[in-house]
Length: 214
Image 1 (cartoon, helix red, strand yellow):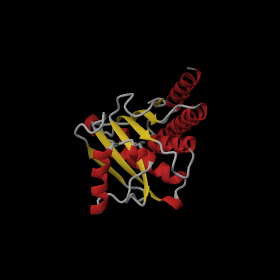
Image 2 (cartoon, rainbow, N blue to C red; image 1 turned 120 degrees about the vertical axis):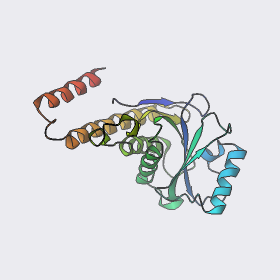
Image 3 (cartoon, one colour; image 1 turned 135 degrees about the vertical axis):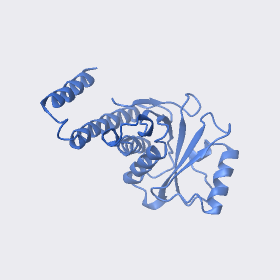
């Protein structure tokens, strides 16, 4: 798999398999910019889930909801960041990783709703979310099972739900490239000895050179 496609578009401008919204505690108002883009009906649904304790916004939490026309996407992932005053880049990376795992049965595309009200800049949010989504979605499953239908499906396209800026574009594309290269190295580390031979290494090097030049 190559570098996932990176797009920047406002919510609703492109079709995706899932929307993902990072949520910080406290969740009592769900008034952040990203949550506000969900509309009153869906925000009310999230509020009820928060009131019942099913949605807490803890770091590492990813709650997958199936939608019924509330948004253009058929699914929503509410990804917790933890307490607002403790949010750092790792909180966003963890949110990305858990979201990728929650979508492992469908893969495809996800749109992250970025939030300027959070205490991390939008380009840094994008960088950490993309890194987490790509790295967290990695699996050595190709060496664990030959049943293709049981292998996790990767995220192949990541959309950033925000107005495009040069800084946002540069941060996003670099993050995707670095994360994908990391996963290539993990492939080599996980490859069984009977497959990790000079021919396999040459093939990986050729693929890397080809993707870098395109």
